[in-house]
Length: 414
Image 1 (cartoon, rainbow, N blue to C red):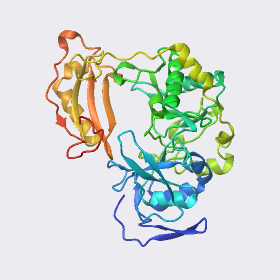
Image 2: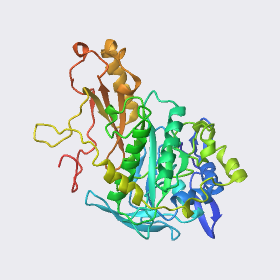
Image 3: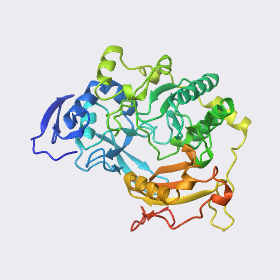
Image 4: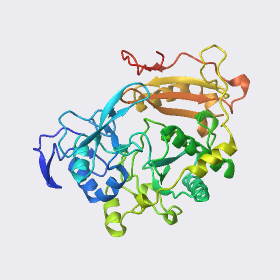
């Protein structure tokens, strides 16, 4: 966000005065959207945004330097938060805990946007019951080379599986390249069983749509398919909720759709500039989601029928780490995506003959979760390169350590 000396804008929202600092800071340069424009966007779609994120603890994903710089993730609510912000204390698998923000009204939406948040990242639990999710999340994540029509085809298969097990799916664009399907569930199960149910659904989708969809957790094994990402249901994971603004140049929005709209909708249609009018005209396609909670019993019964998912072999060096079945080499570990792409281009220049043999899904640039921000790993899958031409593992072009100088129980490598 660009510097500004404009005085704060005070908005009267829900009987509260909410201060918006530097209201004319330009957040999205291409469409010219300012910080105040973002606040007004969220107020225009507040009913839908709160249906997705309200009453849930959330991680604050803040972009203090704008959309072209890496955000940081703030789990702990700021100490000086206003009285209309509730909190809930979550205990993480790492052994740490955090008192996280819980928004319940439009004033809360304006407050988080003022902090530099673009998208909303709530946990799948209510603040009143932190151990039993009431939402199962299906993230359809396309590999490189996969087009939108294939994602839609997989979404319809996932919808059929849900219907067969007595559940209702509510689709929305992810705000990037993929689709999310949200499923309200009775809060009867812990995270472990909800994740198992999601993995079972993913495996069943892969069985029904082989080649189009995959449930393989390891990216290098997916090929040019749509990954049904069940691990978004693991404890500590969050996803951008409905009506979240995503950090793309066109200010794209994660937008709820009807099933009938999927065939013709395109993610680029839905932006900060277009979604408020759509919302005002037709309302929220997810308006009925809270009344459609179902049971996971039939999915969990299917899990027993399918048996345990295939596990990857472990390394023989005594580390217990997974051993990939693919011929992978690692290129770089970087702090930012721009640095990762720069390292990738340097590797390509060094191995031009190898690049000609690669398929789109063979180039793996992954955002990895660090302690408070993402870092990036670049790998190459050499499966389509003749063995005699495969380069050996070389010294990393960049070797960023996201854990340097940080210690806590459960620290990676500790």
